[in-house]
Length: 183
Image (tube, rainbow, N blue to C red; front, side, top):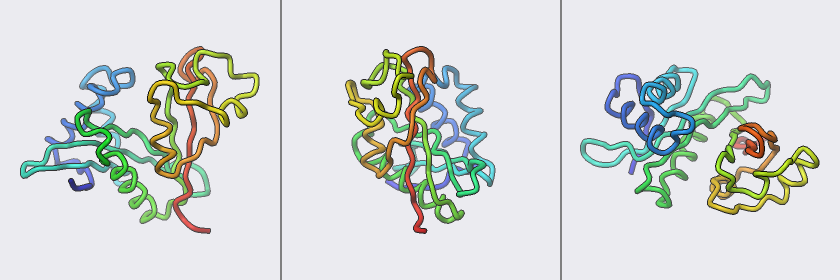
C-alpha cells in the first residue's frame, strides 16, 4: 500500500474515490455527481487530497481530504475520510490520516480538526437532549455501535466539543482536534 497525492489528471482515481463516498457515506453523497463534485473540490493547490493505492494498475483503497480553515493558528479540517469496506481495520485509515498530517505540517499547519457526525445513534450522546450539559456528556461519551470517534482517538485526536442536534434532533456532530506541531 502507498499513500500518494490525488491529482486532477488522475480520472480513474477520482472516479474510484467518488464511488467510495457514494457506497460508504450515502447520507452525505447520495449520487455519483455529488461525490465527484466533492472530490474535485478537494483538488486545488490550496487543499489536500491523498489516496491509498495498491496494485500495478493502482486501485484506490481510501481517500482523505484537507481544507485550511480561517483561524490564525494554522488550523486544517480533515474532511472527508473514507476507506474501502474490505480494507477497513487494516491500517489504511491510519496511514491516510498520517499522510494528511504530513502534508499539513509541510504547509505550516499546527492543528487538524474534524467533525464526526453521529447520524445513526451510535454514541451515548445521540437520541437525547444534550443542551443540558453538552461538554459533560461529551467528556463521558460511550461508543455504543462502532462510531468512528474512537478511531480518531487512537490517532491522537481529542474531543473538543459537540454541536447538539447538528444533524437533526438527537444527532450531534462530535468535534475533535489534534496538535501536530510543536510550539
